[in-house]
Structures are given as C-alpha cells and as structure tokens.
Amino acid sequence: MSLLGAIRSNWRVGLLVVLVALSTAFLFAPGFGSGASADNPTNLQYGLELDGGTEVRAPLVGVTAEGVVFETNDTAAVSTAVAAELDDVPTRDVVARVQSRDGGTVEATTAGVSQEQLAGAVEAAGYEYDTTREGVTEQTRSQTIQVLNSKINEGGLSGGTVRVIDLPGQRPFVSVQVPGGDRREVLDLVNSQGEVQVVAYQPVEENGSRTYANTTLFTDDEISRVGNAREAQGGNPPSVLLRIQGEQAEPIRQSFVDTAVAERGGTRCTYPDTEDSCLLVVRDGQVINSFGMQPSLAQSMLDGSWADSPNPAIQLTLTNFDEARQVSIDLRAGALPAALNVEEGTSRTTAPAQGAEFKRDSLIAGILAVFAVSGTVFVRYGEVNVALPMIVTAMAEVYALLGIAALTQYPVDLSVIGGFIAVIGTGVDDLIIIANEVMDEGEVNSRRVFQSRFRKAFWVIGAAAATTVIAMSPLAVLSLGDLQGFAIFTIIGVFIGVFVTRPAYGDILRALLTDK
Image (cartoon, rainbow, N blue to C red; front, side, top):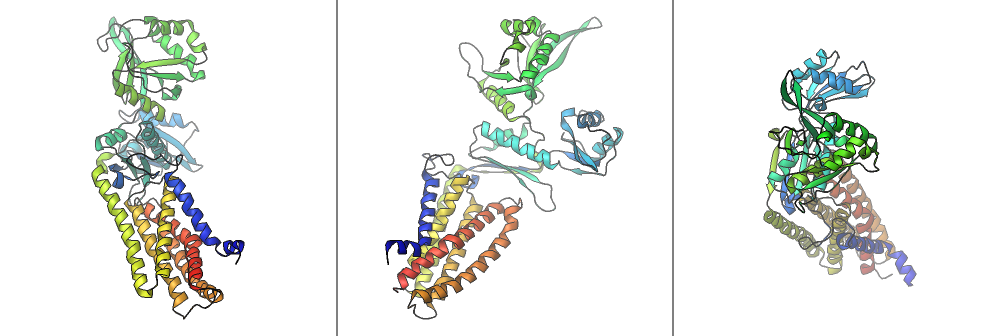
C-alpha cells in the first residue's frame, strides 16, 4: 500500500494525533489560559477543591412584587414613589422594571423589607399588583453576577467564578468560588455593596445656628475611567485618579461651586470637627476619608476651566493604600444591585494542602481506572495488541478533555474529575464492545470482515452514546451546581469518543489483526 493510501486508510488515527497535539498546545503553550507557573506547570485552571480556596453560596437580599400595573413608563418615578412609602429604604434600593404589557416588577433590595411591607408600599404609592415573593428578578441576578465577576478580576483573585445555582423548589442561590482566597477575604467581597460617593460636607446657617449638610457631588455613574490606586509618594497620601464624563463635567463643577467647597480651596479639613467645607469619600454609607480641595483645582472650578478641559479629572485621596485599592475596585466594578444574604447561605473553605492531596489522589485514581479496566481486557483476550491500544486511546481521550478544559479555562474540580473517570469507564466499555465483536466471531482473515464486524459494534456504541448524552443534557443545561461540570465533560468525552477515539482504535486494531 502506498503512503497516500495508508494515510487515507488510517486518517482517523491521524485525527487522533492532531487532537493530542492541539491538546498539548492548549495545556502547555503560552497564550492559552492564565499561563503556567511554578505551582501549576499547565494552563489548567483548578477549582477550589484542587487548589484550595473558599466558596460562599447564598440567596440575594430582596423581595419582589410582580404583575405591577404602571400608569407611567417612567420607572424611576415608580421607584421613588414606592421607596417613599418604605421606612429608611433609599431610592437606589428600589427598582421598577417594565416586564411586559401586562405589568412589571418592583423589587426592594434592602435587608429587613418583608413581602407585606413591599405590598403595602406598592399599594400606598397607588399601584396595583398580582403577588409578592422572596427574591429578586433575573435581571438583578445577572447584574449582580457581572459586578461580582468584575470585583474578583479587579481584585486580582484569579480563577474566581460566580454562577447561579437553581435547585427545584428553592430560591436561586449565587455561588462565589475563589480558589486561593481565604474566608474573610471572600466574605468581605460579597458583603460589601461597594457604592462609592463623593460628598460635600458644608456648614449651613439655619435660624441663627450652624448645622452641617451633606450633598452628593457625584457617584460612579458620572465617571468615565478609574485609575489604579497609587501608593503614597513624596508626602502625598495614597490616591485614585477619576476621569469624569464630558457631559457631566459642568453639572459637577456647578455642584462644587454651589456647595462652597470650591470657594474654600486650600483650607484644611478636620472632619467631623471642622469650620470649613470638606470633601468626603463615602463607601456603603460610611465615611472612609475626608480632605480639602487643592487651590489650583478650586480655582479651575470657579473660573470654569476645569469643565472645559479635554479630560476633567478629580483625584481622591485616601488614608492608606488598601482603602485606595478597594475604592478603585468598587468604582471600576460598580455597586452591587443586591447583596448576598450570607446568614441564609453556606460557606466552605479548602486548605491549599488538602487541595494538593486531592490533585494527587485524582491523578492516581484516573491512572488506576485506565490500567485496571485495560488489565481486565488483557486477561480476557490475552493479546497485547488488543489491550495496549485500548490504554493508549483511553488516555488520549482524557488528555483531550484536559486540553479542552485548559482552552476554555473551565475550573477543574472534583466533579470534572468525576466526569473524566466516567469517560474512562464508558470509553473502555465501548472499546470492549469493539474488541468483543471483532474477535469473538472467529479469526479476522481480511479487512472486509473486520470492517463488517466493526460497523456492527459501532452501531451499538452510537446508540449507547446517544443515551448517555440525552441522560446528561439536563444536568449540563440546568444550573445544578457541581453536577454541571460532571455532565458537561461526560458529554464532551462521549462526542470525542464516538467521532475520534473509537474509530481510531478500530483502525489500529484493523492494522494489527489483518494483513490483507
């Protein structure tokens, strides 16, 4: 047989070789995933069971009224009206949305608001509704997941994931997994709503006495770009540089003038015991720093040149670098639409040493599974040229799955490892079907006979694969927590087996068992 004929006849083996080569690139070549390191020589991203870390699972704080009939398309007005009927609930924590022509939703994301209180507030504001329930809308969940992912990425917590776990008959839970993160760090992340405001604290004369008023100058909505936190240098405190949106520059400048903060530029702020106006940085309702305005910035506010500049900016000063870094992260990610109700949730932490043990044990379990099943096959048939290709193709299948995990950066945890082992089991089972069909009907004396027997075996394998995919699909699609990774990689392994490794094993057996 010519070389070209051999390639055409065994192209499935070539496809397996290409798949293994690509998987090697995905696993080890730079540019895929987070990159190799001394602790992790591959591009694989591990879940917290294998890398150590913390997971917090909790529902979002909030109650929702559904089927609310709006008399206006101005949802902001609806939010304001309902918030006014709730005690100590800021307007930002009440969100109205138009869901359909039949009605919308109004949700309150402040802790302590009950369904009855929200129902009373909606009625008092003059709106009809169908029902109320615990929990928030799907849009709020999606926004919360997006913000938490941003906080994880901005905070340098590489490998962290946020997802919804939707179990039948229960409120949806949000799962936050941070490999390598300790429990306090993760709880701080999910407990902080991260709303940052710059406030003018100014003296006000009323009825012959002096009081102080707080006026919000701007929030993250008016910021176009947030700089990185800067270390203290040359006697200057840590800071964060904020670029203001062009269309918002003039209203913000006017706020600085109206509150008299700009008029007192260069004065020293001694908040809260001060005679002068101060700028306050407020995070989640707590004042975390206070400072005066530099004379040059104050003058540019007064004469209007600040708003006319191409890139109007304000530099926030903080008391320490950690505060500056947290403010920078919060402003980049935005405020959480709803906080996690940690008291109703659960948290678990895996130590890095325990994760390393899980890695080692998972590797050993996978190798033992391959050799144990293949050894049984060798004892059954007594031929190395049947059992050895079985080991090679089974290992290649798992290797390809590892390459896909590295390419997609799907966190490899115990559930994914379970999927790998399931793939080994179903894969070797299919290979046994092939070997049994080919060899149990007598000697294979020609390629034509081999192909006829292989086709019979492949029909059985295809039917079994279809059954597996159908059975696993609901687990892969539904948000059922750890079962999802198991199902996804089992399905991927089945497809790789049916379209690549099983045909390649057939070509190898044909070459070894036939000579004509």
